[in-house]
Amino acid sequence: MKRLVVLASGNGSNLQAILDACADGRLPATVAAVVSDTAHARALDRADAAGIPAVHIGRRPGESRADYDARLADLVSGFDPQWVVLAGWMRVLTMNFLGWFPGMVVNLHPALPGELPGTHAIDRAFTEAQAGLRTHSGVMVHLVPDEGVDDGPVLATETVPITNDDTLASFEDRVHATEHRLLVATLHTLCTSPHTLIPHPPQGALA
Ligand code: GAR
Image (cartoon, rainbow, N blue to C red; front, side):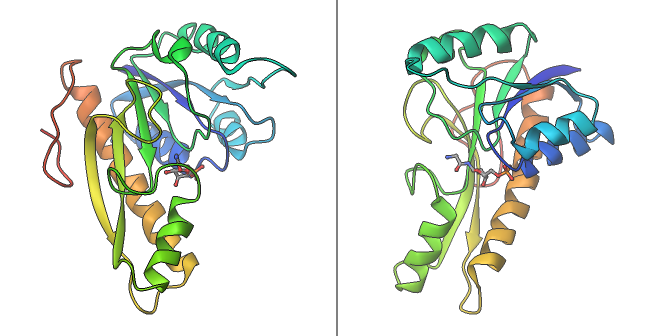
């Protein structure tokens, strides 16, 4: 069983997909801890409900990003993870964190590689579609080697269409359903493969 530590800032629906897949045997892994930078993140309640350590680590007043990340690394390394999963973690990590987990940090982002980095990617894709600028967006799972925002070696992608009769809510639901599936499938591959970098695969598939 591979040990995962999941970092989540908010709702935690992707965390829930991981927890469900671990619980019913689809994912040969165990979530060792869920860590949030947000005190009242629903993700922490989901971890509690699953009987998994749920830890809030907030940034202290005046604390630098680098110092916060050093404390975060200390906390996460104590749970001895094989993979650190950013599932709705809305803070850019510095090398003070990433340097401790080389090739081990996996991020989920609701857009295709090179598109719409940062927050509100789903809303921005929908707005662009309304303006006739796009007909689809997507989801990607990638490694996080450095401080690049939603950027790094791609593990898996899937295109998500935006239809003419979509509302933001219906498009958002489709993106999240895709994320839940793609994240679990990607983690399954990582947890059952040798612990090495995977080259850029064709869309929707892992090498
Ligand atoms: C997900 O859509 C995830 O891809 C996104 O936050 C959401 C979290 O949802 N992450 C980013 O935008 C990272 N830049 P959840 O809390 O329900 O899992």
